Image (cartoon, rainbow, N blue to C red; front, top):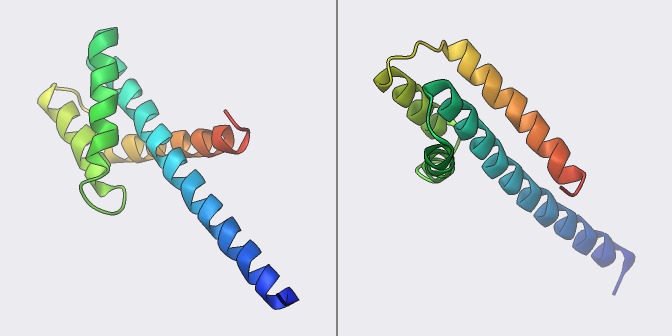
Length: 107
């Protein structure tokens, strides 16, 4: 095997690890977002856990974050809560950063 082949394999392994970590961080972000939203909606602990799981599942509908945004924004509206688009997107960004840091730290 050549040095080039070794470097290529190392790059592919790093790419795969990065993709896995990003997937895990996104799922963690969605769970945190769901728990935050559940708290704002006044859900019980059991209901909050179920809601957070539903938010994680919502991300599987289509690529990107819009499916999660639509779900949480729609649920806020259905609950009679007014949460601005900016606040919701800001929370998504905040939780994404926290989740990435936690994944990198091995938590």
